[in-house]
Length: 362
Image (tube, rainbow, N blue to C red):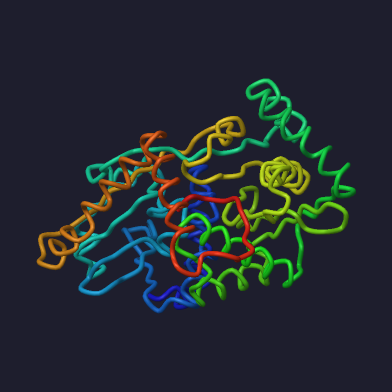
């Protein structure tokens, strides 16, 4: 069914199931995320799985041409899968058949779910900041585990204050102007690094604004001398924050405002009842110092024997293998990142744009 067709009882059951495993608490697996994307994407569906005693699981997905399927908001999500109790065994191909899908690709799937385990092509992990002991305990752990990182952040924060003005932090800004500024910085960063500009797609801009207005999204702002220098827009559901769109003003790049913002985000989250921040998969070495645990994730595909599934495989498999090799080897990742940056500088119209930095290397 369409997400908007889910009734109150079904939404309650969805939320209840999410309490059965700590990783299901991630905001990307909340009904609010699927409902939000469904407002702007007509392709979003939710399969409701029932057994003799009622609803057993939910399977949110997007349906593409010729029965090709993908996770809801693919390319924007850091966690995907069934909303189901641990150990629930389903026949994945039968699930796809019931959904009218010939194939379903995933790249951030909860690796512990048995239904999709036979279809994993690669396994990785998503780092998570653990704030359950409070910010002081978290910072102490960072100081001991990554002393150079901690010392550098605090030094640059003091220098930013001396050079620019008092450093302040707002955990949650309701300002639409601040949000527009962040999206502008992020678009600039995408162009500067040769990535696809997420905010060139109107539906993504509308989705982010929707989450900001409803409070499912939290916009945090780091300022110096009264001027924003770094921001982060994340999704919050209960005690878990999912990092989503961090960015900074490159005029202040020498102060590493993104790293200062991450430490201030941890402090702000701890003060507002958030005990975990999921940081997203790979790409940034500093995440190693921040992480307290990891969520095992997998990428792969489930396919039935259909002509459309075969065509989809032929079109996507080589690219997926190449991307996986880059993600698994830091030297290749750095080389690919440099190639994209060089391409961004050389392509027509690349000069003269004020941009932002920070964030995921998608």
